[in-house]
Image 1 (cartoon, helix red, strand yellow):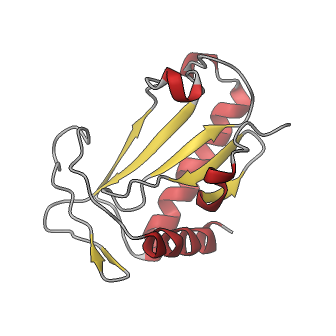
Image 2 (cartoon, helix red, strand yellow; image 1 turned 90 degrees about the horizontal axis):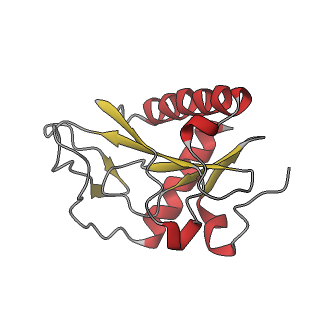
Image 3 (cartoon, one colour; image 1 turned 90 degrees about the vertical axis):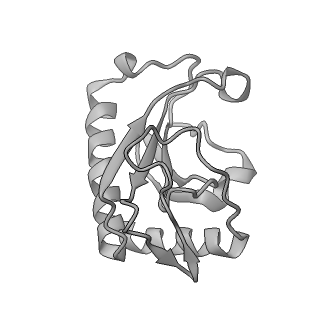
Length: 151
């Protein structure tokens, strides 16, 4: 299957490629470990209801593996949010993807490479999120750590 996600700018964020999906770290890390599962097949306005049985089963496998990787690193999110919105038509023409958003209680502030991640919207919708700048070397470290647990 030809990959849709071929843009060079996304390559550094790829955590693992599956037959039907590509798992990437989201470059916005207000929520430590935020990721995106991107559907590999081409198509515009891909709806969740249009996923095949194989795509759905694989997506379930990805979420289970990813949750286990987060726990294995030691972050242990208190909850997980999943969103499949497709609102940015101008960017990806409604291409199918699932946002995977770990959530952390206020007293649970995971730290990675000296950066403390605080979920300031705990108990509420994860958007709109408070902007948080994370240095490129931290993003690279996150990708490396997660890839190691997803191998």
